[in-house]
Amino acid sequence: MKLIQYQNLTEKKLAEYFLKYENKSSYSSIIWESMKYTTLLKAKRLRAAMCLEVASVFNKDIENVFPIAASAEIMHAYSLIHDDLPGMDNDDLRRGKPTNHKVFGEAIAILAGDALISFGAQLLIDECSYNISKNTVLDIVRDYLVCAGANGLIAGQTADISAEGERTNVEKLNYIHKYKTACLFEYSMTSSAKAIGLKDEIIGKLREYANNFGILFQIYDDIIDCTKTTLEIGKTAGKDKLNNKMTYVSAYGIDEAKNIFYKLIKKNHGILIELNIKSDLFNEIEDMLITRINN
Ligand code: IPE
Ligand code: IPE
Ligand code: MG
Ligand code: MG
Ligand code: MG
Image (cartoon, rainbow, N blue to C red; front, side, top):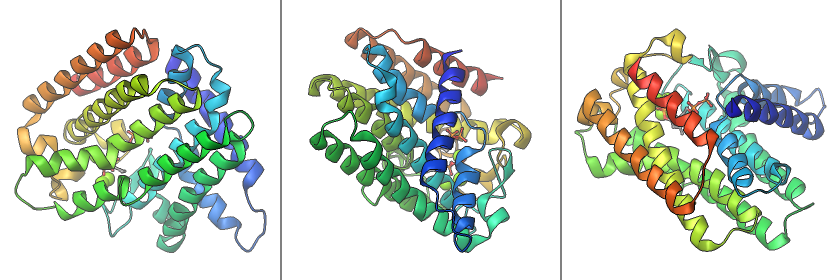
C-alpha cells in the first residue's frame, strides 16, 4: 500500500515541477509535451519510492527529498525514451502506450531525452537549495551527472548494445546490469541519504543494497521479458531474444536466473538487518517482483 502512496505523491510532484518550469513558447512547446508524455505515463515509480523511503525510515521529512525523487524518475524517463529508439532497442510500446518516437518522431524523442537529463540537474539545483546545504547539493548534482553519463547509465547501455549477438560473457553481463540499471537505484538511495545527513558508513551500506537491488531488478526484467505477455508488461514481450540481447536468462536460463535473483534478495535482507531498518515498502516491492516472476 505504501508504494501506491509514493506513486501518487511522485506523480503529483512531477506534474507540479513540469508546470513550474516548462517553456510555454509555441515554437518549442512540443519538446515539453514529449518530455511530459513519457515521464508522466503510469509507472511503478520504484526509483522515487526508494528515495523517499530512505528519508522515511530514518524519520526525516520526505518533502526534503522530493526533488531528488523527481530527478531520478526524470533521468529514468530519459533512459527509456532513448532505449526505445530505432537505433537502440527499437521498441514501439512503453508503459502500455506507443513509444515517444512513435508519437513525436525520432528527432523530438532524441531531444526530449537530452532535455530531461538537464532538466533533472536544474531541478536539483533550484529545488534542493531551500533545505539542503550548498556543498551537499553540489555532491548530489555530481552524482546525478555521473549516473546519467558515460561513467553510469550510458556505460551500461553502450555495453548492452555492443553485446548484442555476442557469446555470453558473465563479467560483461554483470557490468551491463550494474551500469544500465543499478547505478540509478544507487543514485536514488544514496542521494537521499546524503540529503538527510546520514553517516558515510550507512550510505555505503545503502549503496550496497541499491546495487544488489538494481541487479536483481534487471534480472526480474529479463525474466518477465520472456515469461509475460505484451499486455501484462506494457512493452513488447520477447524483445530480448529478438534483439539477441545478453541477459541473465540467455546466460543462465530462467530457473538459474531466479536462483541468482533470490540470492540477491537474501543478501539485501542481511543489509537491512545490519542497518536495523524495517521497511514495509522494501518488503512490498520484493513481494511484487517475486509474484511477477512466478505467475
Ligand atoms: C524499466 O524499468 C527499465 C529497466 C531498468 C528494467 P521499470 O520496470 O521500473 O519501468 P517503469 O518505470 O515502471 O515503466
Ligand atoms: C533497461 O534495459 C535499461 C535502461 C537504461 C532503460 P532494457 O532495455 O531491458 O529495458 P526495457 O525492457 O526496454 O524496459
Ligand atoms: Mg535496452
Ligand atoms: Mg529496452
Ligand atoms: Mg528489458
